[in-house]
Image (cartoon, rainbow, N blue to C red; front, side, top):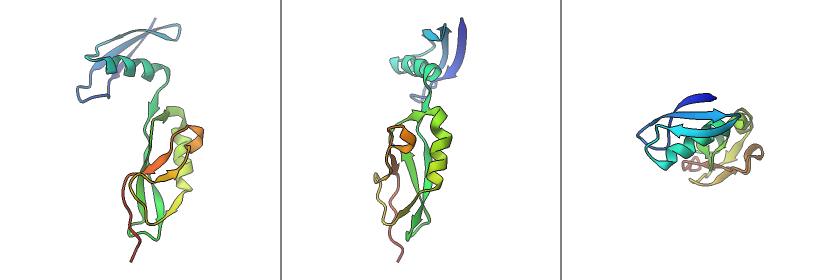
Length: 122
């Protein structure tokens, strides 16, 4: 049997989880105070994912970059490839919150969206 110690990040409580695995499968999650902690613990040890945040260049904007994030979580092992892809992106102003900057980044199924408005430089 293998155990992993985690801190749940699904809510502000930050429960200390102990996930027990047997032959690569989760058999028990302990320490969670809600069902979200159980599902987080199971997912984190079998298929960890993250929301990626970054910025991309803006051409003709009143600021040089716009903050962006993935619209959904992506596999942790694809973060490096996604960051490399974002380095090559430049968008034209204006940019609005929620605009899709890059569709289906690195084949993850997640779009990259703007998290800030950027006006045209006057």
